[in-house]
Image 1: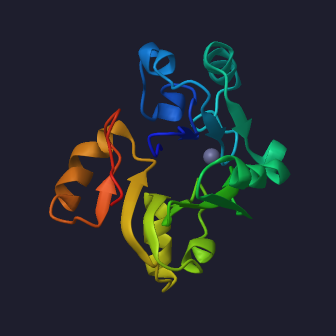
Image 2: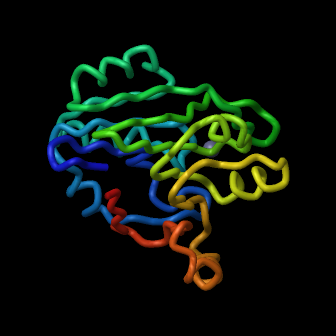
Length: 192
Ligand SMILES: [Zn+2]
């Protein structure tokens, strides 16, 4: 994400192609902006790579945040212009094992952006009001529907799709401006 002044990466760099999810090129690491802020929801390999992050930060500087530094996240509120971030501890179990995981609400220049991470529970996002853009794995939409939870968001960026699902998903969402599947490297969303 960027406002043209500060660049923020969420759950990047991860391990390219981890668990069969989207691959990226070495050049995507080299093209990371200088002095960026890296925020992580959790440290599964499809969201986080210690090795890639170390490599990028060595070359480009910047600062990283995640469950290991959650109390320091709010410092960003002073550091970045018109920026506020709130962390929510949310549930993400992996093969039955609970994993340390956070979702984030970011308000930046008056726009509300919710980062769901991998949580399966739609309750937290269900409590938010007037989200401009919600980043959600497709299962949040499914679970919210099943549990009768309404998500108050203008737009959804949907991720955690396998490349083999891209075509079918694109067909389904073609006419729906509200639901944007994240299926392309370098795909750009503009919040107006
Ligand atoms: Zn995960």
